[in-house]
Length: 232
Image (tube, rainbow, N blue to C red; front, side):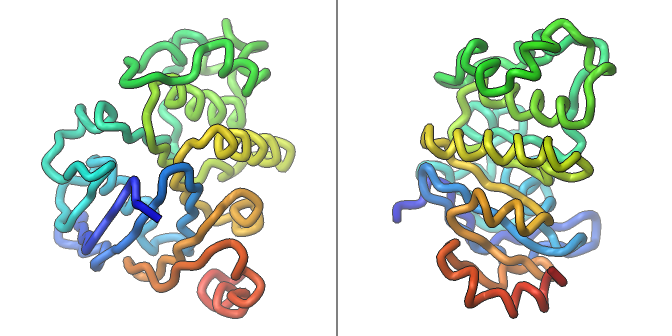
């Protein structure tokens, strides 16, 4: 497999706290890869380091062969990386359509009509302000907003956190459709059972390091280790 996104020897710090310790990771084009791990193990820090929000870092980050380590944060999306943080970042004073159209396009993204077909809830609420959206609707809008821009790789941080089971199921259906369209996705997720339904491959993170990597087909034989590390 040729890696579209490649991370080698990634170290990262918050102030003096050394969080990531030589993270290695590869994601192929069209792959959906999930990073598993308990809270505080470095999953979100990995995504923030990849996209460039966390600048105190060392190592190698390449997208389609291009070195991203020196790319400023405001240019990251232009190189094809889109990030949906756990807090979603919906603008309360804008309605759904205005939120959706806010980021500039950086490539050939999904058309608004396609997005509304993928997220019918957003079409129904297209004129509603951000303050009127449920947590699930905000999550859908945060994902949809990035898909419209045309990025190559979508980084998702805990997209199911705090959502009702019916919304979690809907997010899973959307991710499966994105995979069918050939979208490359890196997913940080604590909900192991949700991740098992959508991922092609897993990285298991513990104390700032990737301690294991395996395809979805090896899940049954890995369950003892997952129970130990994740407590699932």
